[in-house]
Amino acid sequence: MPDIIQLLPDHVANQIAAGEVVQRPASVVKELLENAIDAGASSIKLIIKDAGKQLVQVIDNGKGMSQTDARLSFERHATSKITKAEDLFNLNTKGFRGEALASIAAIAHVDLKTKQENQELGTLIKIEGSTLVSQENISHPIGTSVAVKNLFYNIPARRNFLKSNSVETRHIVNEFQRVALAHPNISFSFYHNENEIYNLISSNLRQRIVAVFGKKTNEKLVPINESTDVLEISGFVAKPEYAKKKRGEQFFFVNDRFIKNAYLNHAVSSAFESLLSNGYHPTYFLFLKVPTKSIDINIHPTKTEIKFDDEKTLYAILRSTIKHSLGQYNVAPILDFNRSASFDTPYEFKDKKTVTPRVEVDPNFNPFKTEEQKSIRFPFKREKEATWESLYTGLDIKNIEVEVETVNTSLFNEEKTSTKTYQVHHKYIVSSIKSGIVYINQYLAHQRILYEEFLENITVKEATSQQLLFPLEISFNKSDIELIKEIKEDLESIGFVFDKILDDTIVIKGMPITIVESQISMIIEQLLEDIKNDIPNASFSQLDMMAKSLAKSLAIKTGSKLSLKEQEELVNKLFLCKQPDLSPFGKKTFVTINLDEIDKKFSN
Ligand code: ADP
Ligand code: MG
Image (tube, rainbow, N blue to C red; front, side, top):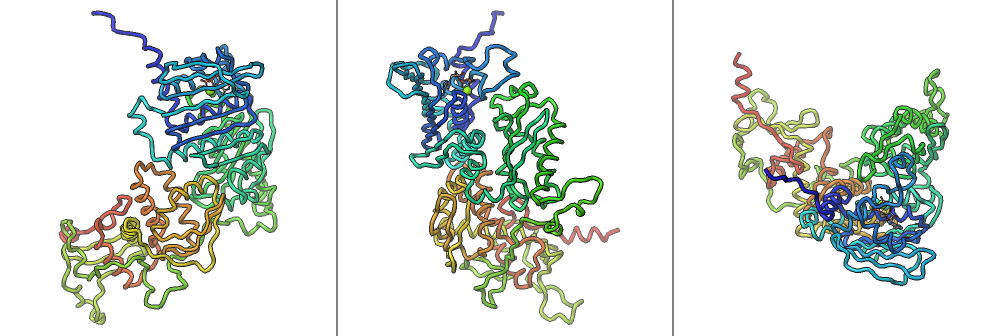
């Protein structure tokens, strides 16, 4: 047998490495920003086009590269940051693996311009798919500019795998925010398709957090500071009443590097213990400084996961530091094992231990509602009026047949008009059908109804909206504002009317008639969260997502008591839906139990 093992050519090896380092445009953003920081820049500009798919460019005023270094920087394992294995345990730079530029250049068109302080002329290098296309001398200010164009141009499968622009932009904004928060002393600007998204001046951490997340953030922050032999902690947590239902604003930086760590996150959450109600997550911006020797960053190509020598100690220190700070700022009981917690609670907070940051919503409240409308508010009139008997017609499901006759009332003679539905445990609507019994889950069924109605309205774009008496101002962080701008038209098509969209605030002057004013901010927050977590590829699925999210937020909840009329209306509407048997999220909206099955239960 002949020998069959060969060494892979460099450009193939680079493409394979790129698979690990570069998942999406945001990965390029991260690598380039980190290189600029390692180069000692005090001012960094990020420019992207088409959510980074067309262009990601980072311009810095750092130390630049010599001509030879500029050429070498694209070789694999080419780095100026470590020279020997031991250096791995004493890292003060973001990069060290020397593979980012090589990987990026393997799968994109890259223009590198750079000049060092003592040079007269700078260098321009163009590389396409690992191949050097040209190299020339140019005039250039001190520093480096790396422009990465047409990412994945030579790997169509990866390019097609990229998500919608809003999702990719979201990832980029996340990376940008992480780097910007880790380095408040560096000024950053960020442009998308020529629009300025951020312009952050050099400042302290508090100012940087406020600049990134909006003015309102300032009042929420509780400072955290602690210094021990093994660990220094600084930064901020948000007061418990500002906790969020989404995990969004949780930042850990270890030696100025953003990391994800479920264990440390748990330490923070547990410090908030009784202060948060179920399902709420604390917001935090925490900086840990540990001896470089006590961590291993080299366990993951993107370096967002790191290993600590002694996680247990860090956990304990972190938890007690935050507990203590919350106590000092009168937002939590002070930790003292010898006394009951309430004893030590600052007086004015004594009775506030169970503060829930929940928005109390009465889904049935509507000041404009007239008496006879007091049923569940189904927003958009349907042409077809359902009759009870027509409920199950057209429904392609076995075992469901219309019970045309009224329910046998001989047992309940006093009840003249027969009751066709019955609500159990404020959760299910039960009814007799020819083949047996149907149990309808009111929450899931209403989701299906609202979902189809929203979809219909989004597609025909003629939803009815109600004017607000006073325009409503809601503040969001900048990246959420960007997202709102992107979905503005869709929101308008379901009945939202925007007065203004400012840098960190939106002003709403009209809303869909289905929604009550007090719900608006909760609904939009939920919607943004759902869009961020979703992975829509086409704009259609974004609309779909929106309809789903709104349906989920607005459906009558389990636990709501429904009048007979409401029950009937719900059932009628459900079986007029195109797909009545499933909720928008694919759960069964009803189950049936056949007479046979019931009979069987009595058979022995
Ligand atoms: P690493 O950052 O892991 O060293 P990279 O592939 O990201 O690997 O970069 C390779 C080398 O190119 C770096 O070690 C650095 O010397 C040089 N370099 C990259 N970007 C810049 C920049 N913006 N300014 C100055 N030097 C840079
Ligand atoms: Mg690097």
